[in-house]
Each structure stands twice: as structure tokens, then as C-alpha cells.
Length: 364
Image (cartoon, rainbow, N blue to C red; front, top):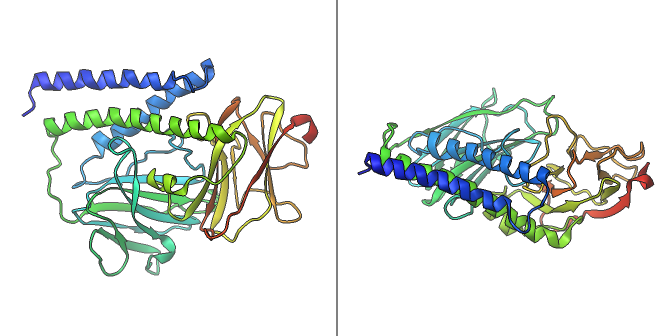
């Protein structure tokens, strides 16, 4: 039984954990500039917002609700600027119903995940369902049952250890596509929606653990990517899936670093048959740069093709010449993360992406 002294101690512990998260930002391998460190501390505040929403406001799997771990101002793990993300906390020993309307968004997927960043440091695949495989009514309405045992109709599998649901909506052109809309309910709840002090203190600690675990995870990734700066090799796909990646996506992920007078020229010569593709630029903390006001990503719809069908993108502080229309802005940054996604491509073949650093004057 939690008493008032326990509550006070848990609050103090929570505050101390947040304080210790700052040491991650100040590590030996992180950029030692005021600008990058300020972004790092802001990153922690964003992670805290996500952690509190997930662990406090939306934590009860008997009364699930959709929330966002990533959006325009909360950014995690090279979040996709073309996406709307929704998350829900669920329990693999209960059953759920998701219902809504399909809309016209280009790509829509539902994935169940086991583990969490604040506990195991992973969000491993336990079930997947694409919109293309969902039976729709004539008006575009649908219903999905989520359970650990097979169900008729639109069934999204999970396992007893499943802890969460991730929905991804990926747009080619947000101005022309209608988002999907959906809700979720538990079909066999076992809990009350009332606040329980002992559960609250547990969740308070989980919120702080989410901040430190998430920040530490992606700093470690950037340390790995520092071995191939300004290149875009295929990432370890199993690692990406363990971190909550979409099983339909092939990830090419890396670290970029440029002076203000340099440009990174990225060329994809072989474009596979795929649902879509995209490239994005992020800061060191693997937060997508601010796509609300800057062009920091391109996709299958938005990028201009070369005459041979290949794609050339230029990452630079200054706009290149007219021969290079696909300019990716660095937005005052000199280093960070970057990611190329092939969505729905045949994974039996590799589709390399070439990178070269050049003086920006060569492109003017």
C-alpha cells in the first residue's frame, strides 16, 4: 500500500532520474556545441512529454486510447516527416477492436509490438496488418480485431507479451490525401479507470525511464553510424525491427557531417518497384528537422527525377544550382542523422544509394 511518504519519495526519485538524463546529452561522443546541446535538452523535454502521455495519461490497457509518441514537435528515432503516427498501450492477454474509415492516405499499417523502450529497450514485432489486406465496407469503413488467438475477418495478431500498437499513415502528398480515422476499445477489460496511487508511482518512474532509455538508445545508434559518416549503407534490419520498425520497410541509415561550404550529393540509380520511398534529414539526436517550415525530406511523389529515372538529392546549407532541384536544407545544423526508406520493396535484392561530398560551388 502506498502512503504519502512513498508518494513523496517516488516524486523525488522521478525528478532525480530526469536530472540524470542530462548526463546523456553531455556525453563524450555527443556534439560539444551550445546549439547541439540546447537541442539535446529540448529533446529530453519532448521525450518527457511523450513519456507522460504514454505512461500516465494513456497507460491503462483496459481503457486504451490513441496518442502520439512522435509528431511535429515530439521526435524520436528518425521519425518520418511523411507520417502520422499513433500509438496505443494494449495487453496481449486481452482482445481489442479498432474501427474507423480508411481515407485515401497512400500507406496505412497496423503493428503490434512487445517490450518497450523504458523496460526492454525494444519494441519487437508481434503482428502486422496492411490496409491493402483489410476488408472495407463500400464507404471505406473497417473494423479490426486484435487478439492473440485467430479471429474471422480483419484480424491483427499479437502475442501474450504484446504491450503496444503502432499505426503508421504515410503520405505521398498530404495536401491531396485524406487521413484515416480510427478508434480503439478493449473488449474484455479487467481493470478500473480510476487512479490507483501504487500504479501511479510505478508509471511515474516508467515515464522517467522512457526518457533515459530512449535518449540512450539513439545516442548509441549514432555512435554506430559514426563509422560511415556521409554514406548510406543498409542498416541492420533486425535491429530496426527490434526498435519498432515497420516490417514492410527497408532502412538505410547513417550519420551526416558537412561544413557550410560542402554538399552531400545522394544518388539512387536503381529505384525498385515499391509502395513509396523517402529520404529525410535529422539532427544528432535523430529528430527529423522541422519539416513544417523547411524542405528536409523528399519522397516518391515530391522528388524530381533525372532523365534516366534516377533520383539525385543535395544536402547542403546553401541552395544548389537549378540543375539540382531536390535540395535538402540543413537548417543551421552541421551534423546529424539521415535515413532512406524503401517501403514495400522486394527485400531479396539490395538497392544501393550512392553518396559523395562536394564543394557547394561545384553545384552552383
